[in-house]
Image (cartoon, rainbow, N blue to C red; front, side, top):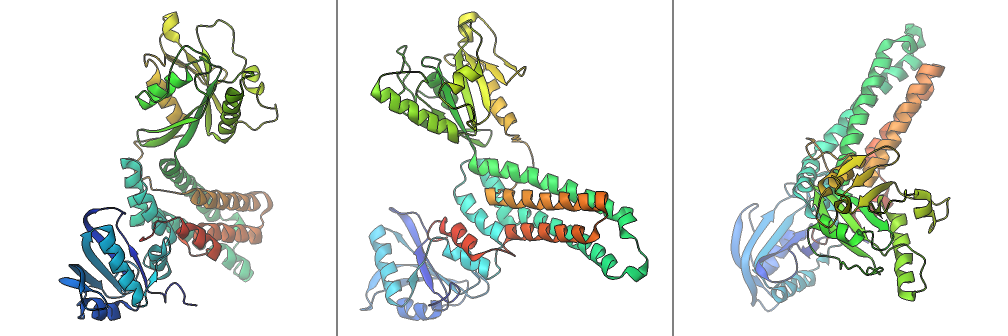
Length: 454
């Protein structure tokens, strides 16, 4: 069985459908042979040739540009051949079929990027940034993904690793050579260096959290009794009549999801059926679905009618439908219909975050948007943010735990050996981000999520 590096692979690299130009990308050791068979000549690297693409009977399938990139000066680090033909799906399928007939295999999702990683053209964080750049849902997300692809994230990770390696070397040297009479545990240099590492690590986590928010966004579920204005709030946030709004209770009976961007922060808004006791079978199903969405949310917007004078008891409102031991997401209380009371919109933080607004006329919607950015710590103006995935955050947080434990061993127990071990474990966690220490299973999961042709 051939390995990923040995396989010569091909895929259509442009989106499906009709267009002016479509591209088939080939990577692997059979590229030069393919030039002779399909193009009828040997190509010089990095020069564009306008040629017919020939079938088995030497008849033209299509004609277009062919460009050859010689290893290692290519995206994958291997010989790469690109066919740029007319953008018709039938033409591209015929050409791809001809390439396969010549002994080339169809590429698996992400296999081109995986080759680039395995051939040291990209580290793992950069490879992941390719998929994130393609899937960017906002300008900020695209810029952040490009920073990661350019290596900004990896550079900071490597810098932190270098700091850990330097301190490990110093500590382990002091342990291995006690005759030098250097009491490193009393050396302020070690404490100062640990403090620098902690500050740098904290800043790196904050940047990664911002990048993760840009990638994954925030899921917000609007919940509450019927006729509280949930659908009106959804419409106000998405700025269109997405949900049906009537004075009839129980109008919303199913889940309605919309996506918006707040200064680059992707927001997944879920409108749900009103929570109440009911004998209506269809409405019961809608409420069951609402409860499932609430359990998965990053935040609940609990809507109540501000024109009703009774005080809101969150325990009564929520635990009527959930057991008290349920692990519910954080809650923001939305007091709607302030226009009926001639009140101005405002935000209160006395007990829980409370936003007073009018969903029907839009008063206070900007306050709600700012509140949602604040509760997740999102800052659209923050510079230098790079794209980060959840696995990156997990590795960074694990590394921080090891660093903190090492600091405790140093300060409270003067345990140099344990400090060195915690620094080593932190380094291993950071190396997982760039792929210097990564399991094959993790690589398979990462690259299988890519689109074919990348």
